[in-house]
Length: 255
Picture 1 (cartoon, rainbow, N blue to C red):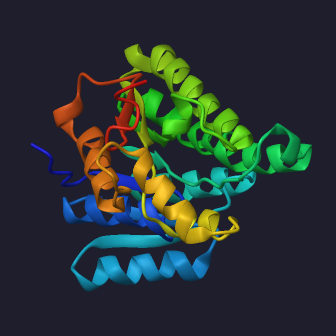
Picture 2 (tube, rainbow, N blue to C red; picture 1 turned 120 degrees about the vertical axis):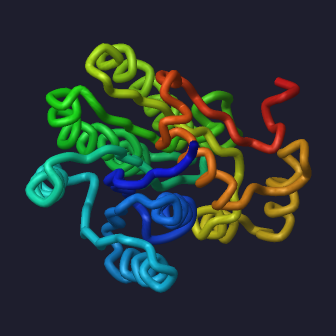
């Protein structure tokens, strides 16, 4: 039911963390995976992991902020395969700070990747999906797209935008045979979170507080988020579109 045999999947920000886990999981389910990232060393490391266990994949350098990069990536994929079955918009960055400790430049930096990046890559691949009347887009949002998170004003602003973009695209293209959903993880043990922890005066105290936010008392693992991506990428989720798939260890259960 969850096999992805003969599907062509592209994952942005696949050089580490959740993106690497999604790329690995999709390859393990039989998909050909384009591992994309603006960090070539990270992308190549993920590719090496995939190919070492027999996965079919290729590394494709991609800066999601660049419209021309996105157009070039779409042209390369379409020239080889004639289609992209599943697009996973995972690339994202963060910032710690309330409004008084967030600059306009901080907001612009996050918007360029977290929102405009999703827009750019989707716009590059969506026309062929609509033309074929078949496609699947999975955006990585955050629990910060569902509830407010302290000292994450820029991050939440961009992730709420991703959720809105997801719903709008899903409605606009449901009758074109294209499904669009987003995954909203709680806190997950990734290099992304590790970098955020280092910004705190007491990283270990911050780690404990972040873990306690989830009702289960721990952060998630990248492979737990990747499992949801495999479900959404598969035909098992054929009636699912326009939704926020929350995976948060119970964070929002009492809100």
